[in-house]
Image (cartoon, rainbow, N blue to C red; front, side, top):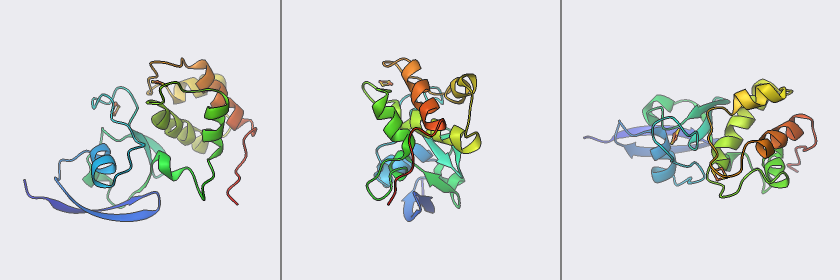
Length: 161
Ligand code: FES
Ligand code: FES
C-alpha cells in the first residue's frame, strides 16, 4: 500500500512521517516516532495500556487510525514531564506504589490525568469510573485510586521551574 505523509503533533512537537494509511495511532507513536512509553497490550481496545490524550481527552490509541489524529494535540506519558520534573500525578503514583511491573502505568496515568483535567475533584467512585477502561494485572486498584485522590486533593503540586 502507498505510504502517505502524516503531520502529527505529539507533546507539542511536530512530526512528519510517511505511514501506511491504515496504521494505528499506537503503532505510529511507538514505531515511527519512537515514544515507547505508550504500551501496546491487547490491540483490541480492552486493556487501556495504549491510552494517550487527544486534545486533553483520554483515548485508547489502538482504537484510532493515526491519520484520524492529524491536526490534534496528542499527549503521551513522555509529555507529562517537563524540564525534567515529573507531573504531580506521576509523583503520586510513585509515592503510593501504584505500579508493580509498570506495564499499565503509562495508560493508567494518562486516563487519570484526563479525568483530573475534566473533573479536578472527583469522588472515589468517579475515580474508579475514570480508570475503568484500564486493566492492571499486578498492583490492584486501591493504591492507584489513592494516588489519583491524593493528586486531586492537591498533595502533589506542579513544580516545573
Ligand atoms: S492496546 Fe489499546 S486497549 Fe489494549
Ligand atoms: S503494574 Fe503490572 S499491569 Fe499494572
